[in-house]
Amino acid sequence: MAAARALPPAELAAHVLTALMFVLLFAKPMRLLGDAWWNDPNSGHGLLLAPLSLWFAYKSGIVAGARPQRILGIAIIVAAVVFRYAADLAAELFVMRGSMVMALGGLVVWHAGFRQLLHWWLPFTLVSLSIPIPEVILNTVALPLQFTASKIGASLLEWRQIPVLMNGNVIRIPGQELFVAEACSGLRSLTALLSLGVLLGAMFLQKWPTRLLLILIAIPIAIVINGVRVFLTGFLVLFVSPEMGEGFMHTSEGMLMFGAAFLFTSLTAWGLGHVERLVLRSTSKAETV
Picture (spheres, rainbow, N blue to C red):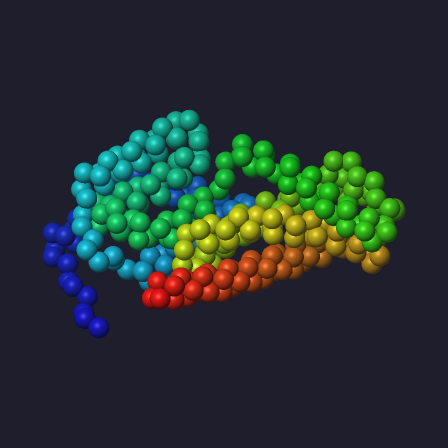
């Protein structure tokens, strides 16, 4: 392996100055994003995605023939700075945090061109998925997910011959009442599984349509698994102990069901990869004939 090229003093100073200016301009978005990753349960997957994105960027390296595109790069950086301060004035956290990723993309284009940005599509996608979803979208999506999980859970309880009376996201069973709260809507597992779908698709699949199909399949997997979690909670509360619906046991059920969703998504990626290889093999044989 060749030794790393030593940077000239002027180029090294330019890199250091760029890093300092980036930290100065985007210190607030970085602090807010780190705070959300650490304190918001819906955004905790960012603690994993951010290091992974850095690792994948390092692993994939620089694309052959990369050339700086100064004008396009500086245009993206200027737009990112404008968005950052406009979002700060409007107290719009999603755009403010996203402007930081946009500025990183501009720096990549400035130094290595747009081809390098496309080459690093996976790191930038993972970082983008780590940005917390705006509250407006969360509030819009969470309630339908709560109702869907309640319906699936109630249907499974009825299938087990358990009397059920459902009112919205409240499920009444003999002697107990289950409330499917926003935290139990499945939104956390959905966002995490979407990120997992992107990651597995990049690692094990070769074609964009197959990768997109995996991401689309991850959505119903998350929804159905969360409905099964509601059923399991009701079943255990009724036949084992009311304590199974709260505290540590309830959290453990959630972790167990997310593990099942992780397994199903991984098996789906494996199956799609197998089908993809068969199709590619048959296509190559047809072309040779």
